[in-house]
Amino acid sequence: MDQRVRLIFTQKPRSSNNDHSSGLLYALGSVDRPHRNSVKKKTWVARSYYHMKMDSLNVKVQQKLKELESLQQIRDLTKHLNVSLEEFAGQIELLGEEAGSIETVTQNWMRIIRAVSLASNSLSNYKEEDYETERPMTERLVRCKIDESQKIITKN
Image 1 (cartoon, rainbow, N blue to C red):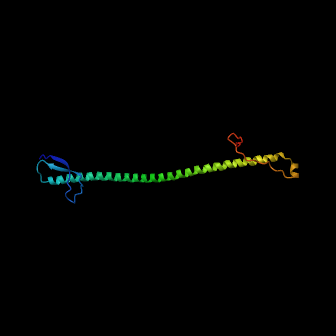
Image 2 (image 1 turned 30 degrees about the horizontal axis):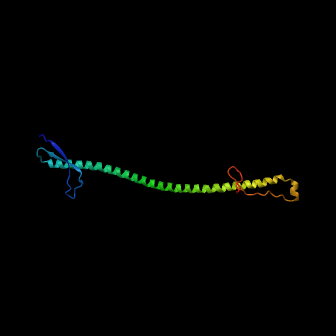
Image 3 (image 1 turned 180 degrees about the vertical axis):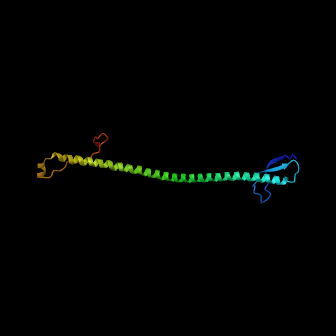
């Protein structure tokens, strides 16, 4: 006997509560001539297609879940990195402000050292005999404002 099998793909209705297909496509097998095993064949074809479809969907779902976990981990690490970089930026800004203060203090010390050096250079003009009679004093230093070209600024 020549029997032809046709597969019809449709969406299975959700009529029963025991239905595990969740509205997935399934294949209905139909035979041109009535046959006593046709119901079994239809059921077998539908079940095998359903299981193949569910296996591939489960694999895809598992892959997507792993991808989701990886993306969530990347998001968490990115948040942590962002917080760390913001803290680091605040510390760098604070260091910049403190560096300006250190520069000002260093410039003041350089001016003080230069003034002490000028005063002590005046002691080199004295001889040993001057030290025997009385202790020589350094030259008097007068504080004057100067401009960038090292000229004294006078008030007008």
